[in-house]
Image 1 (tube, rainbow, N blue to C red):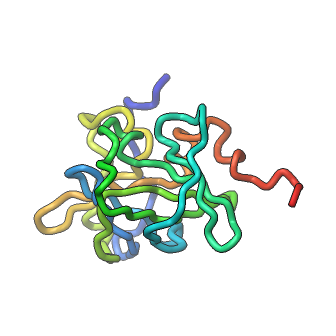
Image 2 (cartoon, rainbow, N blue to C red; image 1 turned 120 degrees about the horizontal axis):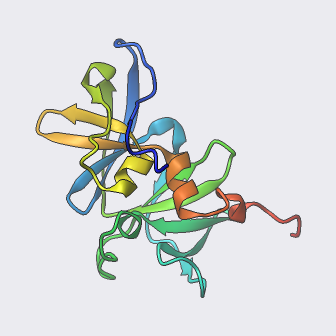
Length: 170
């Protein structure tokens, strides 16, 4: 019913490479596929939205486009980040073309990892990680949870992200 019994990664040849933007959330490194990342921004003026889910921090106007900001910490069960902490927002695009801002604690480097270092998500992780992860990638001294942007947004925004869609008015 919850799909946690079998965790399968996408099929990839062992020679295929993927570029990931690494981001820190609490003590956990996550990887966002570069193909989904538009840019990383800081210091945007945010408009808070009353009655939004706890993880939705508000809306920003990024060069004329309204983008919903989601705090990744809250989604994965960590407390809100400290107000004085530096703000890092990865602007990501879903497969249906919607843009969202994922607030993370820090942004690392863009890395290239071989799928020989890719494994299924361990079933021992929390249900949230199991739902949003494509798998884990090993890198020297750390493990990076590869986050599927579409699954993450679907879990966070109940209508699958259509809330960001322009309703036709200007």
